[in-house]
Length: 317
Length: 317
Image 1 (tube, one colour):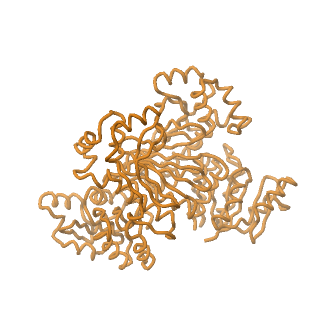
Image 2 (cartoon, helix red, strand yellow):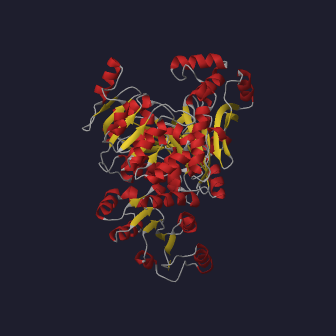
Image 3 (spheres, rainbow over the protein chains, first blue to last red):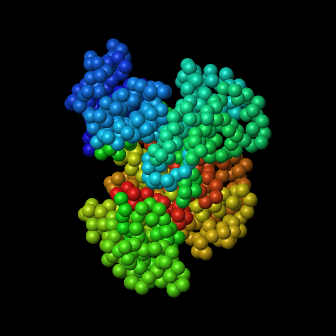
């Protein structure tokens, strides 16, 4: 079935959703960035929208609010993740659900910081909330939890921040210091100019908070404030050398269990499944009846994350 | 929703389905082995059924055909995989679909050998055919393909036979010969008394044939006869030693691509994602928009495979 999407936020992810939607049989009837919007009930053309953004700095001549009021079946929330009240993302999702439309999020804020509020909106709406793209990009993490069924997966553990993993695996492979590798990662576009969100563990923690909320089935709700988080800034190259002498390495490992959420640098065997290299992500599930399960792939990137959004859209049909 | 299951075949997998069904909220209203059946519209008790099988050699006092005629919503086909006409499994599934009931298969035969016939039955029935358990046990392989959407996954590659993988990884780790490790695997219950199905590549080939059928979306249908298959019997320990000197190892790798199905021993880097050890399975997908994705876990075992069947049942609700 063809659905009409309103895409809010046109960073790499939102832009890829607009570009890939036709490949999945869907139309984009509204696009908004923070300053402007383009609305066309007949469907927008990606090239036209983004050419205009490049030339004029706006995606169209409408106001951002016009996108929220447009005709659509699914609102795609792809604005940057914010903490605390998770605004303005939360209000965008609220607007969609109050109109009995579906909401699909790449934005981690509303799911990690206001899970109970989000589920309450979902319960009262004819629309549904989905957020596979908020955890592990293209990796089908939440759909696997849903498929296994309630209570069948008891814990999640793994690497869900590609920037921190890139830095640690380069430090280990080349014997270089943190600052040196960070600068290299920034040159490559793997780390942002302000890398705090990634290297301090916040981004990974938000993802494991979301996993804890999903695994807990709403019985116990977590937010970032409940997570025990430690980043990778203070790891000396010598610690990686020492680990290597013992056949091990260091990774920024998160976990969501019945005991809560923890993220921090951990020693793992050098060839362990969790010791992925570069920007790769991996999650390891503990299951009740089927042992351990590992899922790994690209945890970030525009098209990669857009595939998770479009899979979520597919589940709404 | 609670569904009523008729479980045909009570090897390790069928037995685990009967035992785990209540945990998933379902009732088992019929169970059959090749000689007998137990039928109770109010729901059977696993312990009673299997105690009787142990004591008397039968699961109940009814005929096997009575299970097919019983009241159920979902027929679970868990009899041993057979080639060619894939009987009697195919007829069991046919009986369910002709009654507009669902059919969930662990049996690879009907899906690998008679895919077109199976899809034709599915198209004419109000019931649906599902077969996650036929490929990779507990690993959510087919549901991931479905989630990604038509055409989004272009190739599958990996290790889908735990017996062959156990033998190859033991040969590599211990420097032992094939016959020695096979005997050890038989002692451990990892290999059967007649290991031909596993070590000649047939079992892996059937799984990759199923993957090719699913990835092809029915446009091109494969069966075992179309697969290019080579087993592991003739690999000398010296070949593994030579590979190790070069940082590589040998695994029985299958692939399903637009070019068809191939299974055979391949050189892979020693620490490559595909070089899983022991009985572990892994599949690597090539995607159009999201790079490579890896899924790994337990590819066989009663409870493990039963979880895939019960996930399939969950999707029918």
